[in-house]
Amino acid sequence: MQQKNWLASFYSILILSGGAGFQAAGEIQQGRGALLRGDPKLALPHFQRAAQLDPDYILNFAPLTQGVWTYVGRSYYDMGNLAEARKALERAR
Image (cartoon, rainbow, N blue to C red; front, side, top):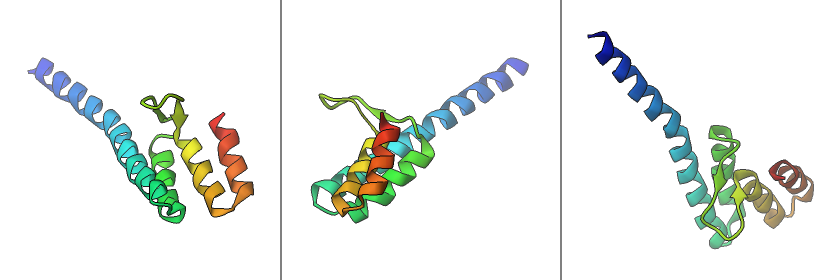
């Protein structure tokens, strides 16, 4: 019986720990879509939510590795808010 409880706890922790990463990935994909449509104001909240969920999230499917802060910075840059863009891009480094 104890082994079943331990196993259930282990799976719960595994699912919950991966949940934030999956949510962050979804937010980033929605934000990327908004950027591709030329709407950085719509994209920024998605990237900010992703950064709150997983501030170290990295996308590895592009030729260059990009983190969530890269997208936050790009959104600010596209909106003309250069000071915030710089902060986010420095954090991305």
